[in-house]
Amino acid sequence: MDIQALYSKLQADGLSARTVRYVHSTLSSSLKHAVKWRILPQNPAGFVDLPRQQRREMQALTPEQARAFLTAASKDRYGLLSAFAMATGMRPGEYLALTWEDIDFDAGTDKPYVLALPIVAVGTFER
Image 1 (cartoon, helix red, strand yellow):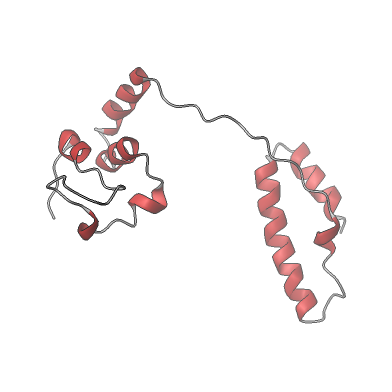
Image 2 (cartoon, rainbow, N blue to C red):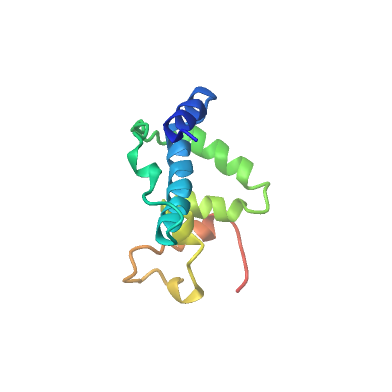
């Protein structure tokens, strides 16, 4: 099996450099275990050239796009969560890890990652 040829074919088939790198990570990890268990003398995935990832500038939504998003999200069962994510700029791993103790409804918080005001402005919920 020619790993370099596999990666080239994946890219030729339209997969992104990021996806090819994910494939490499999985394959390399598996082969690393084969080396550890002395099935292979060395990890052949360590000798390939990985495709470069394109760095792209993040594009923020315009105010009109943000309003359209919030209008559409308000009709979805996760609309409040989507609005909270947009209002705070939190990533999923951050807002999904929040607990009730992290939220200060009196707004006098020393926790910079908590914004309670957008929740009140978008909808209601119960503890």
